Image (cartoon, rainbow, N blue to C red):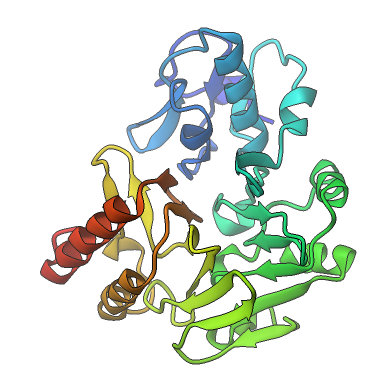
Amino acid sequence: MADLQKRLSTNVAGEFYVDSTCIDCDACRQLAPSVFASVEGLSAVTQQPASVEETRAAQRALVACPTGSIGSIHKGDIANAISDFPLRLEKNVFYCGFNSPQSYGGNSYFVQHENGNWLVDSPRYTHSLVEAFERLGGIRYIFLSHRDDVADAAKFAKHFQSHRIIHEYELSSQPEAEIVISGTDAAPLTPQFLVIPTPGHTRGHCCLLYSSKFLFTGDHLDWDQDGARLDASPDYCWYSWRQQVQSMERLLLYSFEWVLPGHGQRVKLTVPEMQEQLQNLMERMQLGRT
């Protein structure tokens, strides 16, 4: 839980606040952008909630925060906010919440599917989330984009008897994974689900394309809210920026409307808009102008 004594001075006065344990993972700014913003390299409450909806959004951020860095002075009932997760994004695709400190606060997602549900990267293993997944039909597959975002995948796999999917170069982070991807060719696993190797951020990083509409991008690609453009960063490239540029070019072969990242903002655009954004990003990356 957040500590009022550690409340950052960058917070505006009022009910909600962020304390000094914040790791600037961006989760709160995704969930409640009217309340939280980045100030001096950390999140802060820049405007207190002005409506019931904004209060609920701030409570969701409190629940999702991986480090428990968000607090409320009167510690109101957050049971409803907890029950909101997984949070529906569109149709059968959900954002899990309960971001894990083991993945530096990375986002994870859930896809409800008639041929078996998917967990994309891993949230914290919590009782309420496990019960929610059970109500939605369990988890058949756990796709892990790369070694950084496995978090509690093994616990979820054990509970639901799931098949974990990871690239061979990331296998040391999940050595008992049931399905191992190799090489750099796209791998269709089940109807509507395509694994696309995108080496760069790490050697075995992969994206997952669902239904030619939803692209789960791990740490390969995200949306820059301030610049209103797709983005990738050489500062967070642990293996090869040159290969990450090549991997970005490979994504131009596919159509999709959603970018759903592990870190950074998600976005939905039309297919032509997404293609244009991706082309522009690739050109900036090639010129070293991201």
